[in-house]
Length: 302
Length: 304
Image (cartoon, rainbow over all chains, first blue to last red; front, side):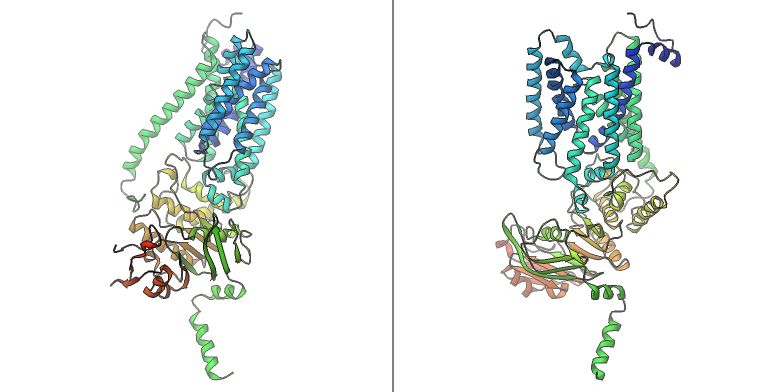
């Protein structure tokens, strides 16, 4: 099958051309669902400084998927089962204080190595699986079935609905756990609930970006948006928008080139982050000049 | 009733006209009541036999050396730590039952410099962060409650004088600026009681004075009771009504001039301590209480 001769540079014609293939339609559908879900969960993950936990959840998904293929089940069930179980394990781990994740990093790293080793074993047991390893690690944008899209959509809708209910106290507990505890916010329970949601989002993202490129959609859009704005509502909207743009751009560019989708999606997300950092580090300079007339009386504190 | 008792009743009345609301509520029930209270942390008895009554609008400072249980007292009042002896009642109920009427400022570390959330959002969390759901943006038409929430946040930001930097990311602000925003956060739900754990810690001297004056002004203007943990009584000496002095040798409660005296501190620490008054009215504690605590000096300006 020849994919295309080359882009016409007319976005509508190009999209029509790509969408004449059902696997491309499914790739765009799945990419859209996952970009929004991973972006929104990523916003809270960055806010809570839990990127390491997210990374571990994605690596736990690898043995899940490999094990599922080994026993003859669809890989997506393996991702969901292991990511959600991993989230519950991390949530159940004792920690130093509310919101303190630095102390648990050694425990998480231990779990992470063991998970990777299990994945290695499952891959070795399933002989002739070597091409599949690539898909598990680096993504499988173009092999998504319609049934998978429906599962992704349902899980994403449920996750976002739950987040809609717990969003505000979760933000409170993330930013200011001591005060939130004093105001009777169930900080510990919210932390566990969020890890389960993060597990679901990681499982979804892993299915299309692969275990190793999960952060392209889970961290990068959120980190970029939070660099550009300190308003939570704007940051959330911007995160989803950035996730969508890099996914759609990555799919489109990969369609017309021989290179993999995951590379382009990750590279575009990375370019966006670098650009945002550049903007932020040039902006304070003129801001400092513009506010020089009103020196803060508290400038020497800290 | 003879003329003498009538006179003294009138005098008492006249003496309190400055705080009519405070007196009314005091008659109903005090804001904090501790009776014969004792607390332990990790099996170690911190303080015992503590009797404390805080009236509405009263400004109480909790002083004492490190590790003596000052923050523990705050946790007890929040209901986060049960007493091992005695009774605690807060805002007409058991501790922990009315925490939505308490503005709490924990002992603070500053915010992570990379935290990209506006000061205004931090203040808003104090108002409705505990509620389920997501806040809708203010520009959406509809609910008046939402508009009044935004107005309330604006009010408390103005009250603490943080209007100039409330829209900047909180991690980029100085310690003093963050502290003002956190006081605004504690004030947002219009609490009846402020619990401030070392609010002047990590501030430089001009900021200590400014923040202390701000807390005293709020306490008086809004008739909010304040219980404030502090290391040094000097920045709050002019505004504080009552001092609770916790020390390894027991506790003492009274006005600053009653409690921070040579004989009282000598008794509390079990070692000779002298209190001097400087020409501008500040207290200087001089003594050799090193035997009790690794860092016993409760006040600045100490002689070794």
